[in-house]
Length: 489
Ligand SMILES: Nc1ncnc2c1ncn2[C@@H]1O[C@H](COP(=O)(O)OP(=O)(O)OP(=O)(O)O)[C@@H](O)[C@H]1O
Image 1 (cartoon, rainbow, N blue to C red):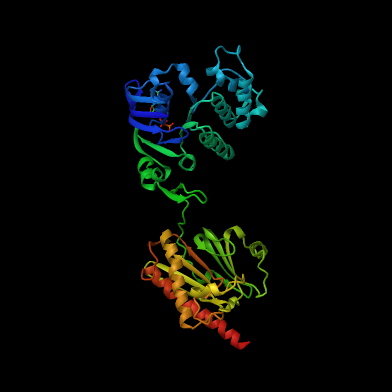
Image 2: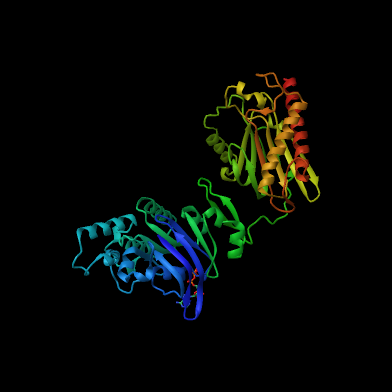
């Protein structure tokens, strides 16, 4: 639909856009990214025909834009510029109606029923119909932005050029506008070329991205290839980290601010623990980066408070998350900041250990009972039953972990737990074989993210060694404690 070849140009003697080439297919949503002053707006102005270019070629539907008349171009291309302004005090509807100009032979004389329908539809889609009789001077920035979008839409263009369309729009209108553009590209084959400052929105919605640097093309590819940490750091000169979007397979970037990370030199140790008949808690003075399978606060996050609660064997698990939140609130713990686990074990039988190595330390806390022990290799022989968890393993790490180290910590801890079960000859009562865990075990890895950088946590790494040792010893001791209690009964 649109082809730009070795395009160069700018203002007066200054060359801004340098040797830029790219293609946009029909129905594509194409994003243009780049730092301030990198030439995004200048490039868009050249495509729309407002600014003449010095070298290269722009073709639309295989034909040079120089061969189209201004009126022909205006029918094909609609532009929503960054600073759309209105000198006169038109009403909203009048402003939108101006967009039909390219389709008129003479203004007002030939206003048709069809024109009216298109204007009303665009006002409806952009949410401005309710104030169509207001003067645009009396609108907020976001409302005015939507009026100019409607004006561009009523042109019924084949190509829509947008300069930061979400500028001024609140969160919900940003989403609505981009959802609408995506829909039109898919359903009507509308081709959209849009400048974005927000990398995350661009990678969520665009099919492909052009990343400009100093007026030249740095990258031109799908979002996954363009929104990469090295590329963004290189072009924007700032610290970012990449994360996958939680529900859509596209990359998202987060800024790493200079201030705000944990700085206090806190060491999580047993003095932060509280143990009573009802629960074990640990309250950290700083938020800890967590990965857990708790009843509350599971997944990845940041948490201050950790609670392992004793529940009776007859505990009704049907709405356990809600009930657990209630339990936490009643005891003064804020559920959103807490990781909460449950166990049928008497929590006073806990085993814990602080292990130290060069520059970092690990506090392991385990409650264990093996009433519902399972051999993982034969778990198919078990019927599914949700009963309160029995081996709950907490691992607090005074150090700075990579994501890889978090995952490896879970693996290493699990291997150490399995070995403790084997050593103590814990048997799966259904299969009669040595068990590898229990059916509802939970784990928590929590790190201060300060101090020594710990890249790996496999069994023979410095961190892995502390975890293996701590989990093996604490699991063994906790199982023995719980066995002793049973014998005493
Ligand atoms: N009308 C103009 N006359 C002269 N120079 C201009 C003009 N408009 C822009 N420039 C210069 O061209 C360069 C590129 O500007 P442009 O607006 O294309 O960048 P941009 O990537 O869109 O930036 P931003 O992200 O800040 O909107 C800048 O150095 C700017 O000062």
